[in-house]
Structure formats: structure tokens, C-alpha cells
Length: 265
Image (cartoon, rainbow, N blue to C red; front, side, top):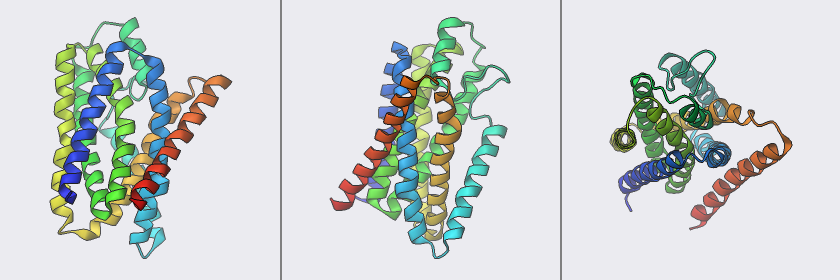
């Protein structure tokens, strides 16, 4: 397949799988499943960042410090964006932002919605986030097809619990299940748009591929460490901790195996 076909296929497949799994999880309210997926997603994100995108960025650069500065800058930028743009709708003492399990509990315990305010903010934030994901997927595929596949897998892995949490927040915000699903579908199309635009832009600006891979690494590290891991601390008991560590290692291992399969394939 051509690089553009890979980008479109990965973006569409990621969006479809994320939405289907998210809808199933959200409609069945299986909070325990979400916890499992979050742990696995952390491993997949960290594995893709440290085993694939970051090494690739270092290979493309003559100055390793330039790459590490890009990653550091990216983490700071994502922090600022999350503060200013409010990718998730948070209150000081009650935040369903990055904890799908907490959002699910809110729906069952507090069915009073907020006339769509938090739901609309979630959709706006997700549309931007998905657009950026499309750009990162395109940059990875242009650098190397195997890297693109592994990066796409990591992004899909973290999109599933995220989309499930967003779906629940939309329901809590007063949207019907059909409308919540349709809005998530429209939001996921931003990944395809971002990927296609990036493909044509990066072909004329190859010098941007290396910094974009650095930003991709920063994005994965930030999402895993800042958004997902804190939610795991809500379950400090030893059995839950062991399960979480095993699932994180499984996520890392799956990325490592996928990388080796496609590199030798």
C-alpha cells in the first residue's frame, strides 16, 4: 500500500475501533473493563514512545539533545494546552476529566445533566486532539511504515478508554445515546483530516518529521503519565496494583512484539 493509503486506513480503523469499543463499554457500564484498558493503554503509550518514536527521532537527528529538548518542550506545551483549552471539563474538587470510571460513577449517581456544556467542551477538545493524532500518525508513516503501524496501535489503545469516558460524559451532559455516538463519529474524522493534510505538507517539509516524532513521544508520555496513571492510584490495594503492573507490562510487550514483527516482515 502507498503511504497515504496506510495513513487513511490507520486513521479510519483507529476511529472505528475506538468508537465501537467505547460505545460497548459505555453502554454496558463495565467500569472494571475501563480500568483494564487504561492500564494496558499506559503500557502501549510508553512502549511506543520509548521503543519506537523516540529512537526513530534520535536516528533522524544529528543532535540528540535537540530531540530531548523537543520532547521536553512538547510535554510543557501539552500541559499548557490542557490548562488553557480545557481538553476535559474539570471542577476544582470534582473532575471527571481523565477518569472514565469516575465519569461512569457520576452517570449512575448523578443523572442531572448540565445542558450540554461539559459535553460540548469534550467534543471540541477531542476534535483538536484527534486532529493532532492524525498529524502524528502521518509523520510516523512517512518516517517508516513499521513505525506508523506501531504508533497507530498505541494511539488506538489509549483512544478506547478515552472515547468511552467521553461517551459517558456526553450522556451525563444530556445528549441521547444516538447523538453522543454521532458527535464522537464526527470528532474522530478529524484524525483522517489531520493525517491527509500532514501527508501533503510533510512531503514538502521533510525537516518537520523529526520534531513531530519528538512531539509524538511527548504526547504519549504526557497522556500516560499525567492523564492515565493518576487514575490508577485510586486503587492502592496490592491485588489491583499487581494487576495494573502486569497490564502495563503487557502493553509495553505488545508494542515491542509488534515492532519486531513488522521490522522483520
